[in-house]
Image (cartoon, rainbow, N blue to C red; front, side):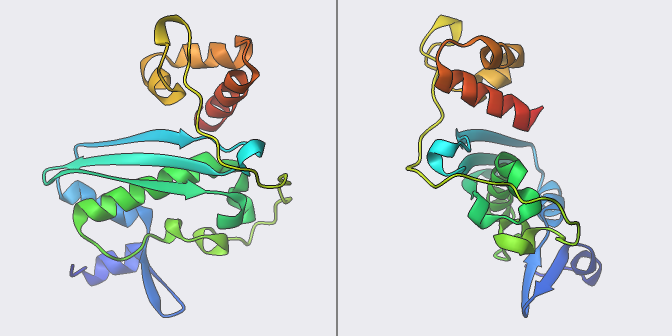
Length: 187
């Protein structure tokens, strides 16, 4: 895909001799391809039991069809300043990957890179402490009430107030904890 000089100046960065596109550039290209919809779904919430490993799936619809991909983020794959925002970074990476497929660009999005490359690390912030990594655990589904069998992501799309209620009132600690993390990261 040939990109104009103006586009490259605005949306492409070169690191160690390799070009990377910014998320905003992929979004611009997707809009030019008739972007109709971007949807994300949480596959796994970051939690101490899974080493704070967040996974999201994104689905992008353009005039050319529907494209999907996943993105992940963990303390090991992001800079210090992004560590408190793992779920959002996983969603951003998933959307960037799905949009790259939709527009047919092979250039990796800068936000997909791990470590210090994904942010300007000139702002000094205190490091976030994380516990030891543990095996991955999927987001729990609700097993009761009118949303039985639905994930927190599905419920959030239908009734965000219910997820907030679960964060305060669920008897199951894993559901309450997951709902709390979900509302904290998405509100």
